[in-house]
Length: 398
Image (cartoon, rainbow, N blue to C red; front, side, top):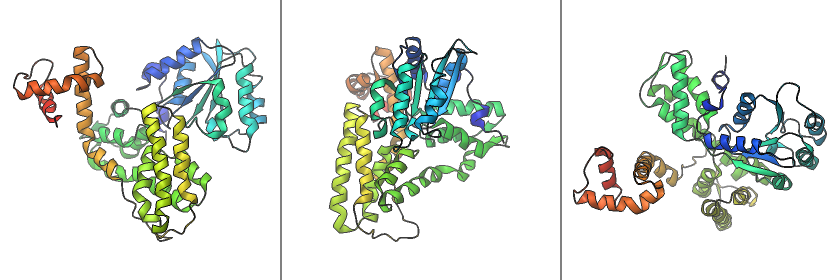
């Protein structure tokens, strides 16, 4: 069976959805590259980090030398594979790109591997690009001063839905209901996951409906959290907890909310103050990430969340059997209001385009006045604001 992720893998930059800004940044960096500086592309799985580099290399006739650093972990193997290649002329293209994938998968015990990567960056006659899910792990600390970091975010559901629709059209599959919209939302910004899910429910069919989602559904998305939480609460291993958080397909912020909400189910009363004190400190760093956009704090947050594992005490939950972990109230509330929030965001973007300002300014400075005008019946549906827009303006009031 051919995987659709490979079958419909983009061949040109223009076929990559949702990463136009980052592709432009990568191209600008390659075109202005100077020896001694590498590029680190970071972000969650399935958002196109490696794919963008591969397609850029192909479209620009660069020879791509790729090594998966999590497979070839030793400094000796990394240097043997790349050192000579990074200094010799290309035989097949007009240049080269040296790509080291999954560098955060390098073993912490092999300190020489990171030093070898730094050495290659320093001596290479060609651009060196590194890929990592989490650039803030401790083992990469010495590397960060030698690279420029471009951080990929999770893909917007609209970009994912566009790709899923394109695949369905090419496969001759008719889509009924909100199948593609739900798949794109449930993927949590992971294009690869969304395409795999689509193939699971659609391969061999000529039509898919909402009912087909029953074999997949949100239960599959939540099943992963039931693998993550037992490790954090029961493993008594800081390294195991950190690893499961860093390798999860869920954002650490979401994992934080799950931990916070389920502490009473796992932790005895006498240990609750100690655990909540630890989580409150993690929450401080979580807020610093949001307010200052400083992603270094995300690492501290993860460390503190992982610390729940090593607070020594026997869980009062059963050792075996299913633990009824509860979905965080904040996530449930956001899920219920997601469609409305997205509608308000679209409205603010529309207003912003009309008055030549940002959506944030439109929401803060224009929307309150439009609401007053609407209440006084001075603002009515027109060419630029539909009847639904007018209703939404009224609903945004206190």
